[in-house]
Image 1 (cartoon, rainbow, N blue to C red):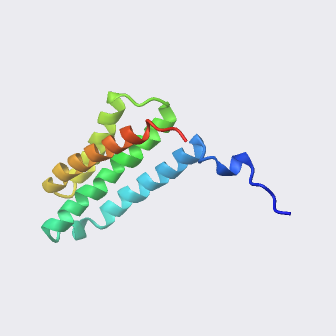
Image 2: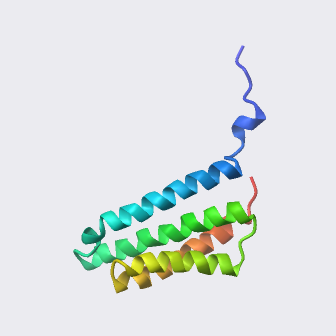
Length: 118
């Protein structure tokens, strides 16, 4: 007879697991950006890609801060936005703009997704 799955196996990750996972992804993304900085400078399309990858720092940072602080306000969002845009600035000025706009899209997604509880 097959065993029914327990309630704990269908739940999502815990807050601690999410903090660890988002911190690892934040660090790996930052190191990847710094490692592949010459690649992002090769053409206009890769500069836009550099802005997108920089905006992932905003996404992972917002998830990290949201799980640590349990409530994300405007100060935390601006901190994560400056993190994303600041790293984009180390690549190219085009990355600043694209990182800002992609981060705003990520903010809208996080705001939309946070309204739903599983």
